Length: 377
Figure 1 (cartoon, rainbow, N blue to C red):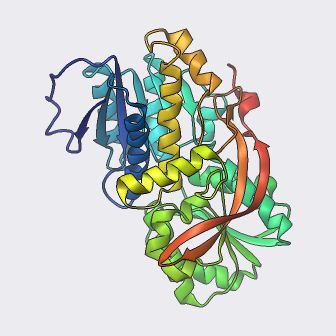
Figure 2 (figure 1 turned 90 degrees about the vertical axis):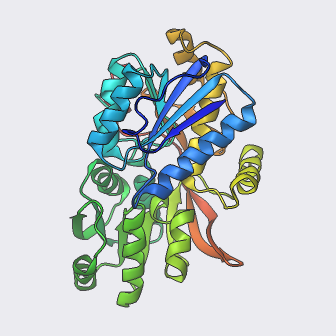
């Protein structure tokens, strides 16, 4: 495996040379700014799987999208036209995915998503060369709505950033949640001050709060919420309670319930080996995003073991077969190339000095997304 990490894309745009790999993979992900932890974990999980595979015929080109759609598009264009990559992957944010994926697959490239799963790409915008290995955006939020019902909540206040994943989040929660809403708020993407929203929650009469605020947004909200003295129970998806976020938030997250398709304590051999090897390689516990990067790489490797990437039909069929040992256990693709999988309920705990999650149940089993019927494949 050869890796060229091009953090400053403009400065290294002319970089070329080296032996030609049989497979060239372009990873566009967020490696700077408030969302950097997410991209770093996807990258590290992906690279760990490649290292463990022992393959030396895969070249990685890794670039920082700076969480900007225009930058992501420029990188994708360069990777496709100048670098002639075979596979693209890595994008964290749904607005960047919407800017990059349709054009990439239209040019005959494969896109393997280790994270972003906007509804538009699961339904009418589906494509045979687009595979999501994480989830469709709504899924973890649907599970949170199902959990809220089982917990007896009947009056939720819900909030999320105003971008495609945030819109999918609230749609997903409402799809499964059976109670009333005391408030529904869209915040600014990248917002760090939530005083106004917390004041609304305090005055709302809610018996629960569902929020989707990934990365630095979630850290800011959770700290401010704890300092506010508002004691209404929180529910969220794993994105707001993931391994990196928890260490920054600390005690304010303890006891909060969240939903995820993965947890470090899932009882299957592939997951146990992944958690142990990731910690040994990087000196930290893996996150949800690291598990998704790891699974994405192993899916790709399993397909390469069956077909050359130049054999488009054969490689596509091999991807669709999903013949790899997922960290989640059972894993399969639905008709729109999005996962069918269990989604779990986790609780934030502390193990020694480390904040983490433990699995406490299953929210929904063998769950597919709501948009597959709109996909024309």
